[in-house]
Length: 297
Image 1 (cartoon, rainbow, N blue to C red):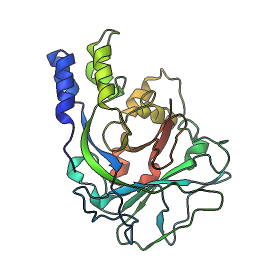
Image 2 (image 1 turned 120 degrees about the horizontal axis):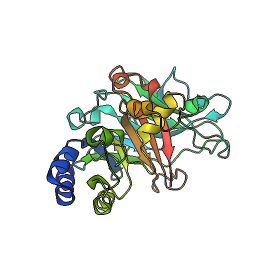
Image 3 (image 1 turned 90 degrees about the vertical axis):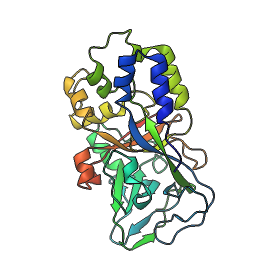
Image 4 (image 1 turned 90 degrees about the horizontal axis):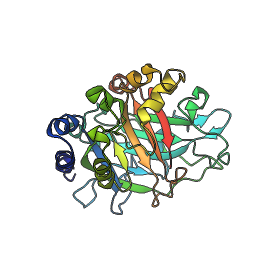
């Protein structure tokens, strides 16, 4: 693991913001793991990952390829639409728990699946405010020691190229309109320092590049993903309903997977896939309760 980006964000805040606001904003920063392409490695026997790569950074997961699932686990299917594509897997034993502020399992594998449109020519879309579509995205947790076998992709589904991933610690900032920002700084007039153009541009420059991530604050392509999920859970009330921001505060980012040329993954117009979960469901390993949303430019 390489060092985090804490100092950079601290310096940006103290350079662009009044002292009191800078220190309060710094208090909202959260640790995350940034996932990056690893050097070429072999394939492990149980997880499809070689965790003994010669580099200092172990392989902690992968994009694409074929999943390894327990014998009694069916390939995820969205009933009436078709099979989901395998997006990524993470080896929890390789993710240092002390680096994050979310309660990930100490071992086992997380596998992410998504109905990406290739099976039905993009006629069905998975949306948080349409419960009938929620089956189009899933997270499976496979405990350590459970026998698994590599599955062949269902007919009509082309697997993504496999890209091994390493991780480095990073510090993440909340989106400027995230409910946690409003909770800390409300009321926020239009000329609030956090919305200053120079500060926001500096943050944007800091976060450039492919953004695969575990934990921390999500990096939205449009607006805060937590509110999208919250509104869906609440049954799609009007966007001005105050319950949306209250519910959004109950959700944390589990993982996000960006558009990636190496994995031949293009989510709409250079978009990102997001999986969020409530901390209590994460603690109870209820990954079936994770929620999905997707944004693109």
